[in-house]
Image 1 (tube, rainbow, N blue to C red):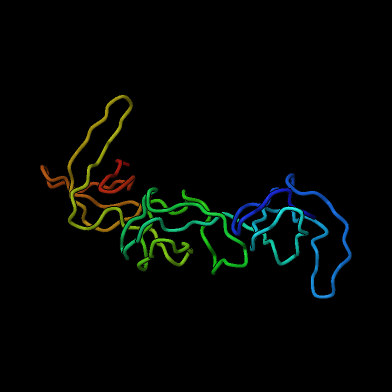
Image 2 (image 1 turned 45 degrees about the horizontal axis):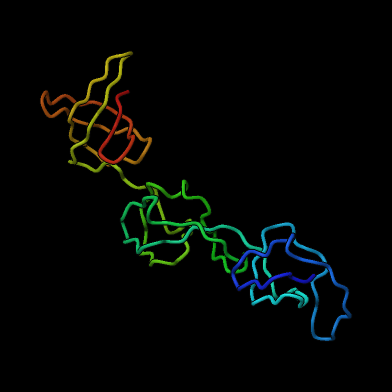
Length: 185
């Protein structure tokens, strides 16, 4: 297989930009004879008209990388990460692939800009912490009431949290819906 134009390292190699050319194998080189099914990137510069060796390409997948440094304990937002295409062989243990998997999670270590994100780098964040003010929204049919409360315990997204109404002193349970936010049961 021969590329019709130059392809730089890290760029996706499109099968439609290739032509088939028969050549005799040299002793130390193995020319690519069948195209992989997955997305492929160049590992070296591919020159037009030069046959592709098996070592010139690698299968690749999208993984998440930190756009900026994420400090330990910081909650990840969408603008902190980006999806990049990387050769599969470069992956560390269990890379994360979708932005939606990491939004709202908390960093377990400091992750420098440009580093890949793995499953061990993030945990579910406490979006409500004890003694913080929490906005509780209670909805009954068309009626919607918003109450300022104080958290009596830490809680993560989707968990129940015990809250105290600042005005009445009454304790109320809610479900965490976001940072400093909960909905009534």
